Structure formats: structure tokens, C-alpha cells
Length: 262
Image (cartoon, rainbow, N blue to C red; front, side, top):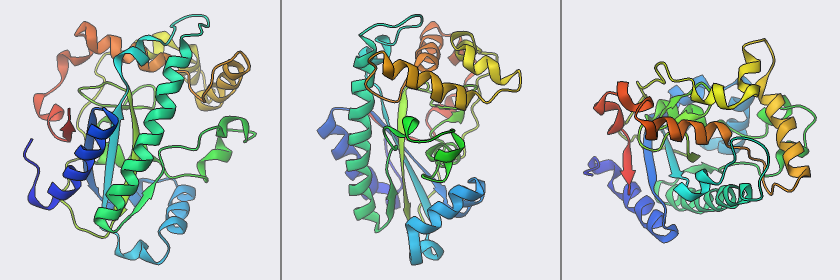
């Protein structure tokens, strides 16, 4: 990996943090204006609140991702409920913690503002999934425009190396950094996530899968799952990559567009 000169200090900080946590990472950059325009209006207003007076000086959005360990993904049951699901839940908490600490360090390096990885526990604190939108700023929009991955059929970001088994955070900075996106990848004919999750299929019938997903997660937590996660679509995506089906149509240029920390 040989990052552009203006990105070297950012990549160095990211690499140090990835090494400290023992994680594999992906980093990409998008123009701030592109990300801002692509956000939901309610999330654009939330970003305005978080950036304050610095909003008008912002020039770049840095998208960072950490990949789930293989054993965490393999712990997700494709049917029924198993206690091993909490291995994935524990990895979810750990990746969020790692992303937040990493994003804070990167923000210090670039004199920017970071958006935390997620609002844990939010599923049970809202009445409908729409109530969540104004509480945060989409990391997926920044990741897609930064080339970290494309929007999969599950709605998650699919990275050409790690499939959808990644978690995201975003840093906004006044520095004009070289863009690494947007992503040009796609899922092609793959429908693995739809086959694994009836809630995703329900969207094709006009239902909001996000709200159905929120309710399902609450039911899982009532049975002992220790995070706002499910992950069945993630495991299905990873297994599709493993089989060679999902990756068969990918252009090698898509894979190397973002910057990787192995």
C-alpha cells in the first residue's frame, strides 16, 4: 500500500490503531459536499449540529471500517437461536469501541469531527425505526462515496474483500484530501442475503424491512442476545464470497480502490 502523500499521516494513525486492536481495516475518502448532499435531510441537519461553525469549512469525509473476525461471523446461526450468537454480539461491541477510539484519533490528526460508530441499545429506545434517523449521521453514505464498498441488497455496505462483515465510522475534516471513490461495485446476480432473511424479502412486498428488523432484534434480545444485532445477512454474504459466486464478476480495480490495513 502506497497512500497519496496527503493521506499518509491519516493512514499511519489508522494503521497504528488497527494494530493495537488486532483488526483488519479499510479506509476511503469522499468529498464532503457529495456526502452532505446525499444524506437524508434530517441527517444533514444532525451533521450541521455536530459540526457547528466548522460545517462551512469541511472539505472531506474519511470513512473507516474494521472487519469482523471470521469466528464471529461463523458464530451467527442461519436458523433458530444459539448461545454462540453472543460471540458475534461481543465482536460487535468490540468493533464499535475500536472504531470510536480510532475515529477520535484520526479526527485529532486532521482537526476534524468524528461520528461514533453506532448508538448501541437504540432499538429498544425508539417506537419506530424512523425515530432513529435524526439521532445519527449515515456512515453508509460516506463509505459508498469513499469507495469502501457498495450498497448491497441487504442495505449494508459490501466491501470487495470483506463482504458486508464490516463496521463503519466517519470523520469530517476541513482538509482537502484525495478521493478514493465512489464505489463502482455491485452484487451482480447474488441474492444470498435475501435467501437468508425473510425480513429482507418482505420489503419486496412493500413492508419496511428496517422496522421488521428492529422488532426481530428486540425479540432476540429477550431471548438473551447481548446486542442490537442479527447478522444472518452478513454471514450469507460472506459465504457467498467464500463460494466464489459473489466475487466472480468483480473488477480488480474495485477491490484496490480504498486503502487496506491487513
